[in-house]
Image 1 (tube, rainbow, N blue to C red):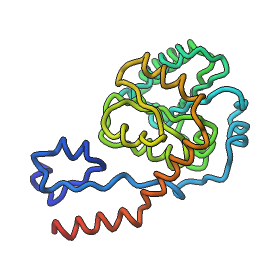
Image 2 (cartoon, rainbow, N blue to C red):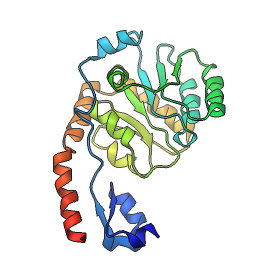
Image 3 (cartoon, rainbow, N blue to C red):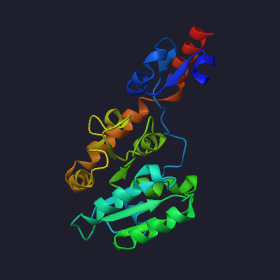
Image 4 (cartoon, one colour):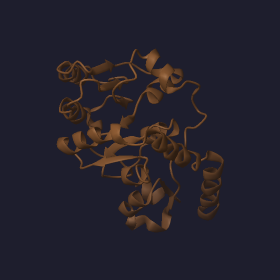
Length: 231
């Protein structure tokens, strides 16, 4: 009903546009915009790790955002347990909306002392410390048509690890991240193992360059053209 009523349908990528093929005449594509400049980002890797009481040894993996079942956190915790690196750390930061689900996650996380749970809202000014301290942002979603969380990570220069589905192959391309087969714990563990061997500075530069290419003033002009064409 909504699609029939709408004059235009905005999607973030070609994959989602294909799913709306019956409505192709109404569909237009404009990527998700960058978050560069939207949040404080004045720290660096060393200061961020010190702030979070992390040493400079070992890779740090991050899961940040609302803790919900569709995001696949259980898969991540299982894959991380298979990682044979005593210095590795996994940060899980974000508000858990369902108490029963939060309890299940706490139980699973308690089996690995390398996991640090911070099940609370992360204020805007604290985001920089989590992203700057981390080697990769994990997005083990079970389904997705877009991902503001991925754009947020890239805007802080943090590479992503995500499943081969929805928007993620495009977002992780050109050195911006690693992909794994959806719901495959062994393949996710493989991606985790590869992370420390990657060129961190090159990946950071690739992430920032991509985010910079998605400036809102530029995207706004594309939206405006679409509004004018469909009015």
